[in-house]
Image (cartoon, rainbow, N blue to C red; front, top):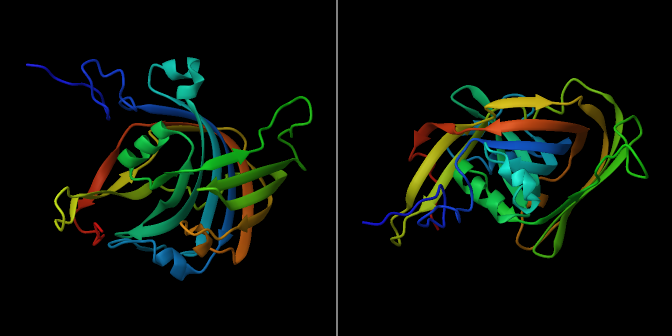
Length: 270
């Protein structure tokens, strides 16, 4: 009798080919966050039942660029950087479930396959994209983390530029924003293999950091432009009013989530 191993596809006799290892997953990253307000109706259309708009500031959006290094518990991937380094850009809104406020990622693009696989497991709607952001450095022409420092960030997918920003730091802050400051409420969806049978997997889950550490946040201002594209809908979250921009270095451990409820999202499999 033979068996196959691995946390995720492909499963093999040894498990060494698995696209992602089992949790916990550890992350170190530089985050650029731009918060703004959009039409709350555009946020509401992205919230399937039973989620509702947040009571306060329901149109608030965070568009976040992240330059990550990630690894399994052993840390081995850090010594083979192609397996640990990736970038992503994602849009976060807030929502309410049974009286509790959650954050929710509604659009996200990454540049590595293992990051997409992790997203499928966690309920993030990840797609491939091209993401770039200015990196700080204490020497040469790169910006330092100080007042007046300027950082650029760009996002593209399917050969189209979707967003671009320039963030100028102003002063130290108490946090790096409020929109992405709650546990995530995500759906895990998988259509049935049989046509017309709906969803084989339909779960609303709560997910968040098992542990977190972060450097000094900085607040500043952003010049943000979101662009139309034929196969993306980020531009529906149009900028109506800027809030603030932030920079922070963080370290996060993710080690699973919990089921809130199953089979009640009303999402279509087609």
